Image 1 (cartoon, rainbow, N blue to C red):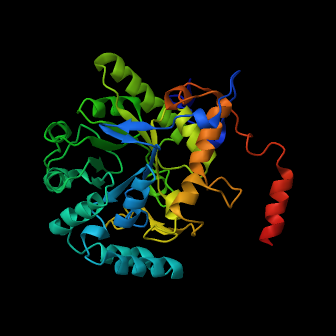
Image 2: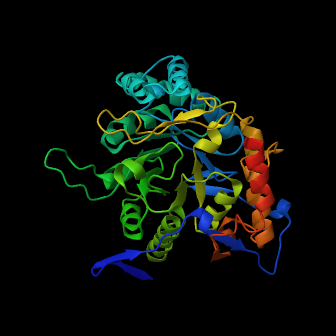
Image 3: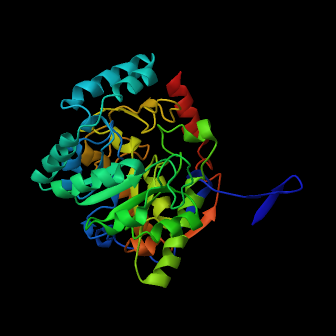
Length: 388
């Protein structure tokens, strides 16, 4: 339904995770019988969880651990891991700057001035592959063609082309447009493209031959795009619209392109809602930055924080709540929904009568902005009391 602001400007109502709820059906399923596996391109994942290509979240170590747990970490080829041989020392400088909250953005900008070293791209990929983990890497569009060849030669499995907003149509009098269709067609690796939030843009990206679309502009905890640029679409509406594009594209071509909800998911409940809206997998940043194995150890920063002219990210502290296995599989030591994310997804699916992700995408959704607050006055009072 469309609305109008004033006489001429037509607008659309959009929804976020806190505004909806999932409705149980007439059937429930034993959680031991729930299948949450997914396939992205030709890569099979036991759990549909991807770690964001953020330097405070993913390094070689976390990629290996997450791979062994059945998920997939995406390494940022434009970050500190490919600029510095001993990246952890540099990350410690960023952590200290974020702790003190003094000139953190300036320090990050200075650190990211160091040129990317192509030999480190190959080295990091080989380190991940040596341990038997699936390797995924991410780069911005202008570096995609150059790094694609290096990544493929090093044995990379999945290649991600990612920016704040990526489209097939790019108008510039100074830059050569990136041919995304050529990139997808020139490699045997599955290619994921992001980010986008609309039906038409997603459909056009799918026509490049990519295997997945990252959905989300600005919802991440460390991203300031919505405040700096004023752009973005709440994740519920964005995922539903892009999933609709996926279904239309499948009917037309018979090819399934994975919808990966990227950002804005804090709790297990948010993740469950993302799948109900049509996601095939989810990409998480701050939730996994809480892991003991994360390079930032409770600190992380937006991918565009280092932009030399207009930073669109910030450093945030989410703290360390446990190791990666506890965060994903439990047992949960917290009651806020940030641990045992896999258990939350399986339990939700079982309660909704969904045996797999495809069935989860079809569950009933209602608009219910008060769902998190109804009857919860004692919880609110307790939190206020604990905070005093």
